[in-house]
Every structure is written in structure tokens, then in C-alpha cells.
Length: 196
View 1: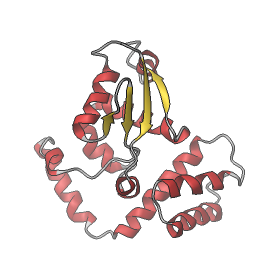
View 2: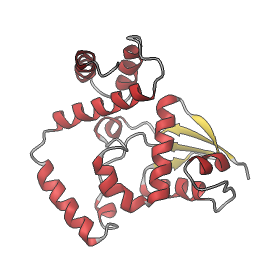
View 3: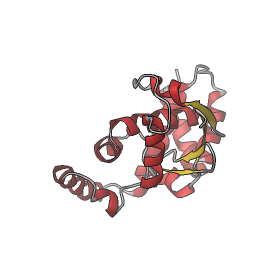
View 4: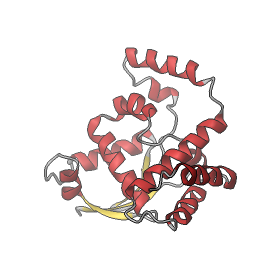
């Protein structure tokens, strides 16, 4: 059994555009209780690395385990392997054959099956969130997600010159955001000097 695993993006234009950033409160409030802290933290780590390496990369199970504070744990029952399998069961990833997985870059809205996994008090909170979110139009939500994604990509970049916006534009378009939303987000970032 190899300790090296290939991670690639699971490309889904709808979820990539309308899904939730792993840093979004939605994910912290509703996906975290379903995934558990280890799988949630690992997923955030894997997604951040996918943003740095959009075509994919390899992880060493032991080192990745250490990176998220679990110590050097390898083998069939390591937390990293268990988390990857959990993503497959929950629709957040797929086993791609051999030592390869594809992982979603954005988390989808909870399905009824997922909501059924939540404790009662969180289900109540989720129901309240749903009724509150009816007031927010999909266009506003999409712009907000594009802005969050672009800001996070910018934060992870060491080069903060204006050339970085060409890369961000390409990444947003690759994730399925429309050219108008992409342009609007980038212009707003330039105007507010978020890139400095």
C-alpha cells in the first residue's frame, strides 16, 4: 500500500459556481458536524492545495497527517485515508482508481440525507438559515462566493503585483463564474485595494 496519493479536482461547473467555500460559515455550521473535525480540517487543507495546484498534486499520508496535527499516521486505517473514504460516501469526492482521488473544490448545499445526519439542535439552526437565506438572491450569493474565492487565492499568493489578477480571472472562469461576475469581482478588488 502506497503512502503517496494523487489528489485532483472534481470538476462540477454547477457546484464550483454555486457551492460553498470551505471557509464559509455555512460549511463551519453544517458540514463540520457531518464530516467531523479531522475530515473537515483535511478537506480545507486539500482544497487550499488545489487552489495552489489547480491540475492536482500528490500528498504523502504521513506528512499530511502531521500537517493537520494528527502526528505521523499511515496505513489502511489512518485518519487521512478514512477521511478520503468519507468524502466519497458523502459526495464530496470520488476514488479515481489506485491511489488517486478527486475532491470537490466547493461544498454543495446539504441534501436531505445530509440534513438527516445533523443533531436536532443543528437541524433547527439549519431550518432557520434556510428561511433567512430566501431573502438573498442567487446572483448576490454567486458574487459573494466569487469574491471569497478570489480573496483567498490572493491571500495565498506571495506575488501581489497586478499580474496576479490575470491568474485570478482565469481561475474564476475555470470554476464556472461568468465573465461579468469575474470582471465585477476583480474591479472591486482593485478599487478597494484588497490586493495590497
